[in-house]
Length: 377
Image 1 (spheres, rainbow, N blue to C red):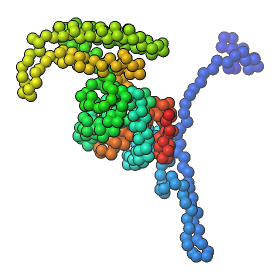
Image 2 (image 1 turned 90 degrees about the horizontal axis):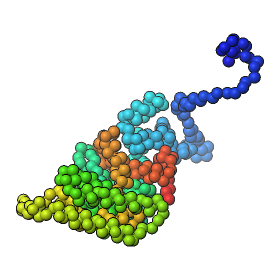
Image 3 (image 1 turned 180 degrees about the horizontal axis):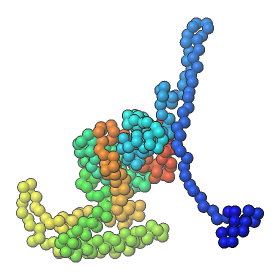
Image 4 (image 1 turned 180 degrees about the vertical axis):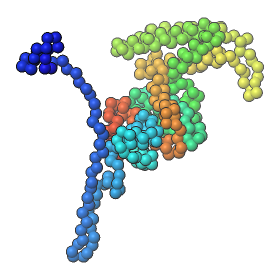
């Protein structure tokens, strides 16, 4: 500022009163750094043998990409689900680097192999957890229907791809067959066959109750939905305030549960549930009666959260973890090979786990590529 905006007086020699500050944040252009390694070659004057110095173990080709580039490519593919072709375009447009899909796939293969022991550690961590969450979702592998199975907690994630959805796949995953504590799930029948305590996702049940209330106008469904919400509010308050469950209050809430079920039985008499034998010898019932029967048969599993504060009300943890596969399918498409699906599951589980534990993702991928994945508590 050289002169006054009002009168034009010269201000060059006037003392500064104060400063108004504005800042601009930017990043410098990305420039590729090339590090050349030279191996000395010498001929022994005694025997004539040609001797070559060893290159560093990680330098195994005449020309190759460094670990930061490779780790970034794996990060883009397995955390942000960017397709291989678009990753190549990103590197070319932003960094001036021509990296092929084959290079990224080879890096994923190496990362996949280096994470085998980490995956075993995660399974052990889940087996010793007091509560785990389980879910599954469909996925396409070389054009055929497969299934992604997940077992997780707020600290650990394990993904497993398999052509089957049921017990064969769950057994192959190797967690529920040995698990002895509480497994939270949506009530899908194969889960119930494992020798552990079970807790049902009440968010699923509440959605079904709303459907029964709206479609069949049944009061018991409305009352049960409101009661489950009241139970959740009570357990949430106990957790937030660090209080123990009050046995008398739990007993009173459980008694109200039985009362609502009794009302449901009154609203669904045999006349509404025709005993007509079907093709498979079954006696069809209304959707309302089927849901009511689940509340009768699985009362203990539904109310487990009310008696053990370690058990959550819903299965949101597994649903959040399994949602990543749905995003992968939408953004990046299906898997062309079984090995590709397995690599994604293992690498994605590693990324999910280190993020849950507050560890840096890129640093974790670099460590995995070096054969020393980050340790988790």
